[in-house]
Image 1 (cartoon, helix red, strand yellow):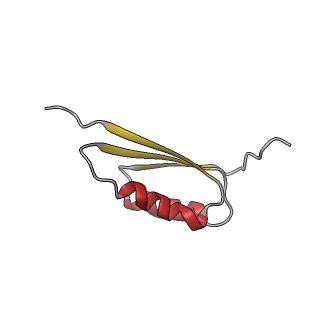
Image 2 (tube, rainbow, N blue to C red; image 1 turned 45 degrees about the vertical axis):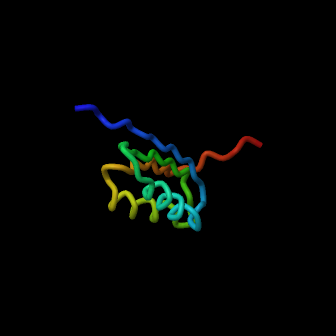
Length: 77
C-alpha cells in the first residue's frame, strides 16, 4: 500500500487575530489524496490570536501543531 504524500504548511504569525481563523479554514478545506500538517508559530501575540490557535488545535490535534511563544522577538532596530 502506497503512503499518501505529506503536505506541510508552515505559518508564522504575530497579532493576526482577524485573519488566522480564515487562514486555517482555507488550509483545512483543501481536498486531495494527501496527508496534511500545519506548523504554526505565533510570536507572543497579545490580541487573542493564541486563543484562536488553541481552539483550532483542540479541534484538529492530529493536523495542527502550534508553537506559541511567551516572549515576542522584536524586529531589529
